[in-house]
Length: 114
Length: 115
Image (tube, rainbow over all chains, first blue to last red; front, side, top):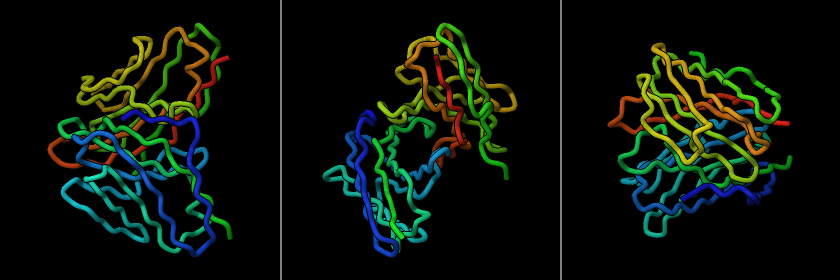
């Protein structure tokens, strides 16, 4: 699927809450998925990745869930902090393609209120 | 270990001019990819280089080109600039060895404004 970025979804949470950011992907041939965080004035920063043979992967304060049946990906952030405020992108890599070529989702703006 | 380095950080050009952007990948990374980021289209893949060869190309006109040097550093060039080329241009690098799931690491980008 192509990235569409006209209107970004937004998520506003209070500090300490858990956040869930969702992403739908379109290509059933995608077999590797990555979440990136982008702060203002910076490039995307790698958060966590997951392969298509998994349905859940945990990192530090973050969990990614993959539902291949409905082509859905989610990022859960535990105990959200003001420093988590950023734009979050999911990205997919198609099986057989080199890993330098990713298709990005539109992004979600996360705002964390103290 | 130094991250992906892009220069310059900001550029202002006028329509019709050409521009060259530079990227130094993470040490040991042999694959360099370029992306364009705009508010309207989001992040879009331009091309990828590995061992001085382009191995993937996105859907951009021929005015967008790139190259990679033997030390893995890469440049991208945009000729005959148009207003719509105003964007953040991001470079990313990975080991490029293939066969394994590789993480892609991004630089901070070059913000290009075309007037």
